[in-house]
Length: 182
Image (cartoon, rainbow, N blue to C red; front, side):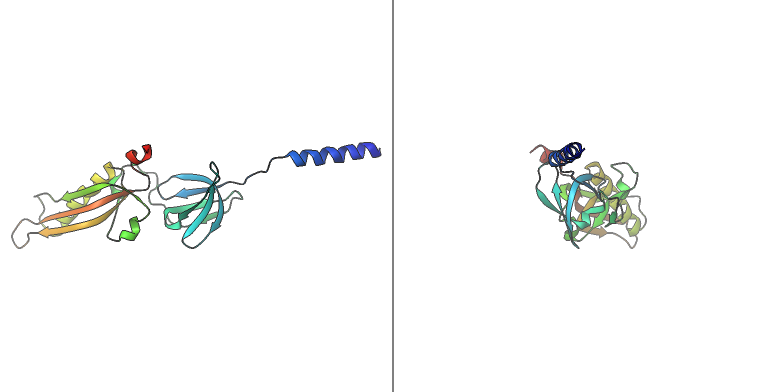
């Protein structure tokens, strides 16, 4: 009886000694609807530090680029509202204009975009709206989600046909195709 008991204890000890360490994985949902399965190390006010499960490298990400984190335990930490919900990838209506360079600091530049109003506008407000829509459509076609406005110019009024011209640089959450290949 004593031998059977010792045999069972020895078996249990040997199986636990050879058992692999189970890694608990967390999921980071980024604002661009991209997911990262990682092991979150720490959360600060402006940064989240995590371990990349493929390389084992500890990395950092700004919380302004993260929508939410769902931990292995099921706990959810929400940082930002989603930018888009169930929409087409290149929907121009969801492209955001900004004049603050800090807003696009961690994003990837995809190219310059510009827009000019049509000659059918009656007011400067409608000319501005037409030029902005044209610029947003060009940015969406390039995969951009945010535009840093670099130049705006309006002309006309007082009996003349109003025109509006706007320029900017389109940014995306993901690197452009040519940078992905490098």
